[in-house]
Image (cartoon, rainbow, N blue to C red; front, side):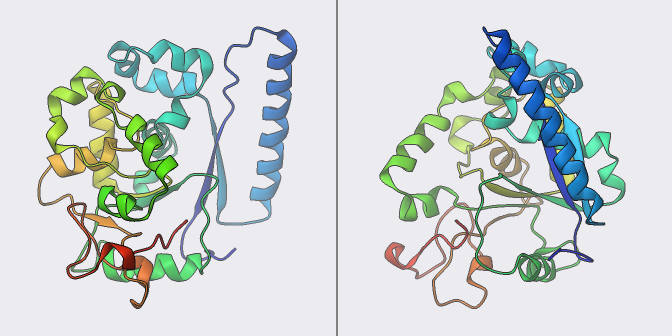
Amino acid sequence: ADLRGVADVWVQYDTTCGSFARVSRAAKCRRLSTQGEANLTFLASRHANLQVHVTNTTAVLEAFPQIAANWADGERFREWGDLGRQQHETFVASWWRSTSASARYHSVWVLEDDVRFGGSVRDFVLRHEADHGPCSPAHVHYAAAQFKPTFEATGSVYLQSQWMHWTKASRASAPFRAAVPQSAWVRKVEYVEKMSDRVVALVEVALHAGQFAFGEFFVSSLCRARGAWCTMLDIACCPPTASFEYLKQCTYSGLPSGVPKHAVRDCVA
């Protein structure tokens, strides 16, 4: 409701149940998926700017066959249904095309279901559009929270160890490693991302070419490899006293000039 008149909200619901050794678990998964879909459909009927996109891993992989062909775990994704957990962008690109989103939107914000934000989401989106939207002089094509410098300054020891696990070279397909050298990878946390229509198109081309990697460095690395036009922003890199601190500009290369690491905190989570 807070975003009515400002943005549409889409819930992408993955009904993939995967393969279970016990028939009872598979039946339970299907039952919960059906109930979840019904609940979301009812909720969407109460809000004009809320829509539901029901999909599954099999449908997404069929849209991008080069993923399975160039990724050792491609068939495991189909079997267990964990593609969306490890890489959101395949689902985003599939939604973008299957719903003709490109004809209606200039960008998309992608949020995991456990993201917390203590302020007004409406104010956040409006201020970002004013400062970094396509009509602003500082248009940002890709935004995320906690790029590597910010994460190292604010993340817990446990999460930092997990983050290193997520961004190993083995988390990328051979075509991706050939297209984007590891020295050029831009690592960040994945729980919130903004992609412009040009970035979504970039992702789609990469996926069709078998270029695939874990979400913690996939789009940000593609963006950096495309040069100056693909501008990036770290929305979690901010001095605590700044006005609209969650929008304080910070590039992937470091913290804002003159800001000590101990003065930086995560303004999103």
